[in-house]
Image (cartoon, rainbow, N blue to C red; front, side):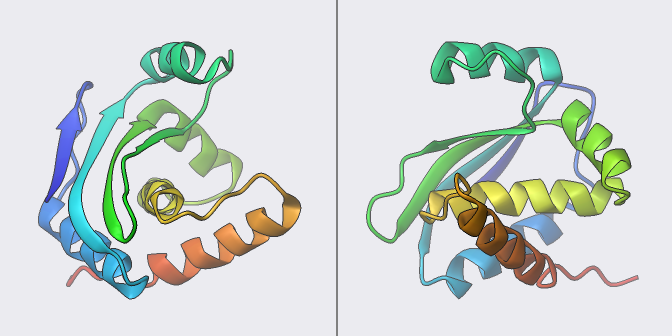
Length: 139
Protein backbone atom coordinates (compact mmCIF):
# COMPACT_ATOMS: atom_id res chain seq x y z
CA UNK A 1 0.00 0.00 0.00
CA UNK A 2 1.16 3.51 -0.78
CA UNK A 3 -0.22 6.35 1.29
CA UNK A 4 0.16 10.10 0.88
CA UNK A 5 -0.16 12.33 3.95
CA UNK A 6 -0.03 16.10 4.08
CA UNK A 7 1.10 18.30 6.99
CA UNK A 8 0.87 21.40 4.79
CA UNK A 9 -1.61 22.90 2.35
CA UNK A 10 -0.47 20.83 -0.62
CA UNK A 11 -1.76 17.69 -2.31
CA UNK A 12 -0.49 15.66 -5.22
CA UNK A 13 -2.65 15.91 -8.28
CA UNK A 14 -3.58 12.48 -9.61
CA UNK A 15 -2.27 10.49 -6.63
CA UNK A 16 -3.21 7.29 -8.45
CA UNK A 17 -0.65 8.06 -11.19
CA UNK A 18 2.09 8.44 -8.58
CA UNK A 19 0.98 5.19 -6.97
CA UNK A 20 1.09 3.32 -10.30
CA UNK A 21 4.51 4.75 -11.08
CA UNK A 22 6.01 3.95 -7.70
CA UNK A 23 4.70 0.39 -7.86
CA UNK A 24 6.37 -0.03 -11.28
CA UNK A 25 9.64 1.38 -9.90
CA UNK A 26 9.55 -0.99 -6.93
CA UNK A 27 8.77 -4.01 -9.12
CA UNK A 28 11.47 -3.04 -11.64
CA UNK A 29 14.09 -3.59 -8.94
CA UNK A 30 12.64 -6.93 -7.82
CA UNK A 31 11.07 -5.69 -4.58
CA UNK A 32 7.61 -6.38 -3.19
CA UNK A 33 5.67 -3.41 -1.86
CA UNK A 34 4.50 -3.88 1.71
CA UNK A 35 3.85 -0.37 3.00
CA UNK A 36 5.09 3.03 1.87
CA UNK A 37 4.00 6.35 3.32
CA UNK A 38 4.94 9.75 1.93
CA UNK A 39 4.51 12.69 4.29
CA UNK A 40 4.68 16.14 2.71
CA UNK A 41 5.74 18.85 5.11
CA UNK A 42 7.78 22.08 5.27
CA UNK A 43 11.37 23.10 6.04
CA UNK A 44 10.66 23.80 9.72
CA UNK A 45 9.32 20.30 10.39
CA UNK A 46 11.96 18.49 8.35
CA UNK A 47 14.80 20.44 9.97
CA UNK A 48 13.40 19.55 13.40
CA UNK A 49 13.30 15.89 12.39
CA UNK A 50 16.79 16.09 10.90
CA UNK A 51 18.13 17.36 14.24
CA UNK A 52 16.11 14.94 16.37
CA UNK A 53 16.70 11.72 14.44
CA UNK A 54 19.92 12.29 12.51
CA UNK A 55 21.69 14.94 14.63
CA UNK A 56 22.01 17.21 11.55
CA UNK A 57 21.24 20.90 12.00
CA UNK A 58 20.46 21.90 8.42
CA UNK A 59 17.63 21.89 5.90
CA UNK A 60 17.10 18.83 3.74
CA UNK A 61 14.58 17.87 1.09
CA UNK A 62 13.97 14.31 2.29
CA UNK A 63 14.31 12.02 5.27
CA UNK A 64 13.70 8.31 4.77
CA UNK A 65 12.89 5.85 7.53
CA UNK A 66 13.64 2.37 6.26
CA UNK A 67 11.75 -0.69 7.56
CA UNK A 68 12.54 -2.89 4.55
CA UNK A 69 13.31 -6.52 5.28
CA UNK A 70 14.97 -8.42 2.47
CA UNK A 71 12.97 -7.68 -0.68
CA UNK A 72 9.85 -6.58 1.25
CA UNK A 73 9.89 -2.79 0.83
CA UNK A 74 8.44 -0.63 3.55
CA UNK A 75 9.21 2.79 4.91
CA UNK A 76 8.19 6.34 5.66
CA UNK A 77 9.45 9.16 3.47
CA UNK A 78 9.18 12.77 4.66
CA UNK A 79 9.57 15.47 2.00
CA UNK A 80 9.90 19.24 2.44
CA UNK A 81 7.87 20.95 -0.26
CA UNK A 82 9.86 24.14 0.49
CA UNK A 83 13.18 22.44 -0.35
CA UNK A 84 11.76 20.81 -3.47
CA UNK A 85 10.55 24.21 -4.73
CA UNK A 86 13.92 25.84 -4.01
CA UNK A 87 15.86 22.98 -5.59
CA UNK A 88 13.68 23.08 -8.70
CA UNK A 89 14.66 26.73 -9.17
CA UNK A 90 18.30 26.07 -8.30
CA UNK A 91 18.62 23.17 -10.77
CA UNK A 92 16.34 24.76 -13.39
CA UNK A 93 13.83 21.93 -13.20
CA UNK A 94 10.07 22.04 -13.00
CA UNK A 95 8.52 21.50 -9.58
CA UNK A 96 6.77 18.25 -10.70
CA UNK A 97 10.03 16.82 -12.05
CA UNK A 98 12.00 17.74 -8.95
CA UNK A 99 9.27 16.27 -6.77
CA UNK A 100 9.36 12.99 -8.71
CA UNK A 101 13.15 12.94 -8.38
CA UNK A 102 12.96 13.30 -4.60
CA UNK A 103 10.14 10.77 -4.31
CA UNK A 104 12.04 8.12 -6.27
CA UNK A 105 15.26 9.01 -4.43
CA UNK A 106 13.62 7.93 -1.18
CA UNK A 107 12.42 4.66 -2.69
CA UNK A 108 15.92 3.95 -4.02
CA UNK A 109 17.28 4.42 -0.49
CA UNK A 110 14.74 1.86 0.75
CA UNK A 111 16.15 -0.52 -1.86
CA UNK A 112 19.64 -0.13 -0.45
CA UNK A 113 21.08 2.45 -2.83
CA UNK A 114 23.24 5.07 -1.13
CA UNK A 115 24.64 8.45 -2.13
CA UNK A 116 27.51 9.07 0.30
CA UNK A 117 30.39 8.82 -2.18
CA UNK A 118 30.78 10.50 -5.56
CA UNK A 119 30.40 7.16 -7.33
CA UNK A 120 27.23 6.34 -5.39
CA UNK A 121 25.85 9.80 -6.18
CA UNK A 122 26.42 9.29 -9.92
CA UNK A 123 24.71 5.89 -9.79
CA UNK A 124 21.80 7.35 -7.80
CA UNK A 125 21.30 10.19 -10.33
CA UNK A 126 21.35 7.73 -13.22
CA UNK A 127 18.76 5.53 -11.50
CA UNK A 128 16.61 8.56 -10.64
CA UNK A 129 16.57 9.60 -14.31
CA UNK A 130 15.79 6.06 -15.44
CA UNK A 131 12.93 5.63 -12.95
CA UNK A 132 11.48 9.09 -13.61
CA UNK A 133 10.99 8.07 -17.25
CA UNK A 134 8.61 5.37 -16.02
CA UNK A 135 6.09 8.05 -14.93
CA UNK A 136 3.32 8.56 -17.49
CA UNK A 137 0.29 10.82 -17.37
CA UNK A 138 -2.06 10.98 -20.33
CA UNK A 139 -2.69 14.55 -21.43
